[in-house]
Each structure stands twice: as C-alpha cells, then as structure tokens.
Figure 1: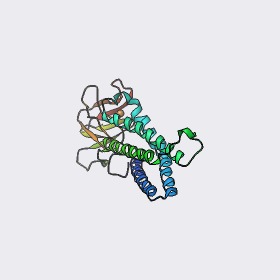
Figure 2 (figure 1 turned 90 degrees about the vertical axis):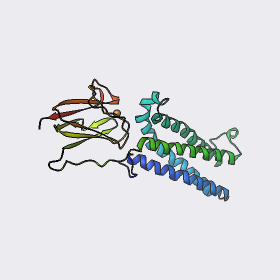
Figure 3 (figure 1 turned 60 degrees about the vertical axis):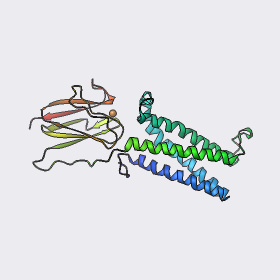
Figure 4 (figure 1 turned 30 degrees about the vertical axis):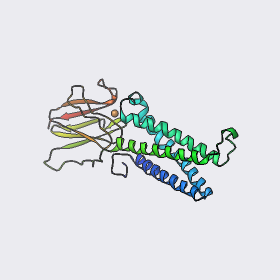
Amino acid sequence: MGFLDTGATFTADLNLLVQIGMGVALLAGARLARLRRFRAHGRCQATVMLLNLVMISLVMVPSFRSQVSPNLQKAGSDLYYALPVLHAALGTVAELLGLYVVLVATGARVVPVRFRFTNYRRWMRTTLVLWWVVLALGAGLYLVWYRGERVASQGPGAPGAAAVATVTVQNFTFEPKELTIHAGTTVTWRDAGGRHTVESADGFLKSDTLIAGQTYQKRFDVPGVYDYYCGNHGTKSGTGMTGRVVVTAR
Ligand SMILES: [Cu+2]
C-alpha cells in the first residue's frame, strides 16, 4: 500500500510525487535560464530527463505492460485505458524531445549538425509545455486508477458478531484463492490494485468493476461451493483469474 491516502501502491505514489517534483524542477530550471545561469540550468534539466528515464523503465513501462497492454482494444471506449495510452504516447514524445534538446544544447557530437536547432527558446518552451501536459494527464490517470479510498483490513469479528473474512483482489489473483468459511459469514473482496470484478456464473456474485481500494461484500448463508471469477481476467469455465468460497454448516 502507498503512503498517500488512496488505493495506490507505494511505487505509484512515489512516482506521482517524483513526477510533480520533476515538473517543478523544470520550471525552476527555466527560471535559471532566464537569470542567464546556463550551467545550472543545463544540469537541472538534464538531471530531470535522466531521472525520468529511470521512473519510466522501473514504474511506468511495467505498469503499462501488465495493466494496459492486454486491454488495448478497450482504449477507444474506456477512459481507464484511453488515459494511459494517451499519456504514454505524449510522454514518450516529451521525453525524447527533452533528451534531444539536452543533447543539442550541450553540443553533443551524436547530433549531426543539420539536426541542430539554434532557436533554443522555442524548442525548450515547447518541450516544457508538453511536459506539463503529460504531467497533468499522468495526475489524472492516477486519480482515475486509484481514487478509491483505502480500506482498513478487517480482523476477525468480535465474539457473537457476524463472522467476516477478506479476500484480496490483485493483479491477477484472488488471495486466498480458496476460502473456507462458516455459513453466515460476510466476505469482503478488497481490490489492492488493478481493475477487477467478482462474479459467479449463476449471478449470485456480481460486483461492479472495482478499482484499487474499493470493496465488494456478500454474505453466505447457504453451505456449498461457490466458484467465482474476474470478468476482466478470468472466465466462467474456471480459467484465468478465479476463486472459490467453500461454505460449511455452522
Ligand atoms: Cu481481474
């Protein structure tokens, strides 16, 4: 769990704060250029470009590959996937543009002379504006994915109280996969990351789409075996992301 009070993971929270910090650093760096402190300006902007490469490869690319890539066909109709696709596309352009500007500005030989610009101000401003557009998209993406509130995990019920049990829903498993409870127990599915549903073929279980931090509850009064699946990553026939609740007589 992250440290911001949302359903996000630690790395997602860390990335958000680092990204905002980098956006502010770029603005401060632009100010340095205006004060004609070009050395400090160059160091500041180049550091941000390199640090962002680290965040992209350690946080954003893995997240995109596990959560967005399998659902690319939904990006046309669903903000949950459209936002990360747009963010990734513009973000890639912004990062490449930033690296290019840094290379040209430092006079690096890897850039052929005919690909060097001289209008620094225009290129750098364009990059800065694009960078902030991408940052705003990223913050919006964070809100769409993680706005669900964090839910404290429930311990065993007090004596005499209705029994409770919790299943953690994550990418891409239910934990525990098989849960055994007494009749009369209320089960809470708590989403710890990604977008999932809890559904059974007979319709007894039917959650809305959960995002990180959200929960779904169901009370089981009748002993039996209840198989269920995630509508996004599993199937009725028991493949993929599935789980089972075994209810025993009291
Ligand atoms: Cu799922």
